[in-house]
Image (cartoon, rainbow, N blue to C red; front, top):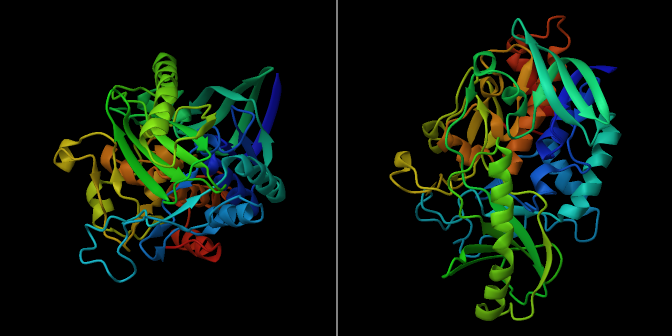
Length: 428
């Protein structure tokens, strides 16, 4: 059986994992990234989630760092990105909001829309330049924990191998590492999960707006069209209509993928027949993976709350900034039966480092969707720019941690970590 060693093992090659791996390698750690597919980017590429939310709160940019480098790399390719130019069409404009808490553009005024095909080219380039070792087509099949430490990770592709890392970053979005262990060892938070969505792309659209909502009857539901970087192309956010979903169950995932795919053709036909400018549209592609908003989360040393998010709370160990509205896609009693709460336009909250550190392990960090946050708070932290910001923090912290023989992530010096992040152009 093959054996591999590394300072930092990143599980998951989505945008969060890539950001974490680049940060760890740039800060001197021997870094290995493992990804189950043959393509990097996760839901951004496989799921066609081309609008990257969370960079801007109103007219204030709150996420920069490596996440912004991704956007700048995409700018080098024709049609790679619209940059941050996709403005909400009903935004009243700079300094014209009468109520910052009711602003329709709060947290979504500027959205970085990217060509996900070009993103597939940019991400491996960034990893290679940072010196990250990458293993694609590789599944994690088991994890071993002894005395609060992840001591080995079993992987499988064509044959099984063992990786012995000093620090592990779970950037799977689904809490995969925790899912391979018992709740007693990781403190898994498993509860109702947000509904999934399947994205599809259409061409030959003659609409000029950046974002358009349509709601049709007879099972069509609510559709959101978002402008794609290429002229005449839009990505369509196509809800599955599934409220009882379990992202850890193959049967549930299969049902969601097939059910959502069945809705694509009638929704394209509805747009052709009912929406001016869509009469001659063509279906260009359907996402290979259902868009998962929520899955397992691991209880950390601190659990970010709804109050933290909507009150713009700052923390002494704040390592990333979030600004997206609390968007659950399903009614919540804590939101008074609503499915969304808009935050203060122009404001942002901190994600504390403690929310990345599982309470029951010493050398495991969470990054992205699976950090320690309540169901409601995660409705804000789950967007891609925020996830990448937590990835950069996790990678930087992991690199600092390996200086210590035991690699206890709780002993990372917060002043040193925050200063390093600030030097990396992170907004704190």
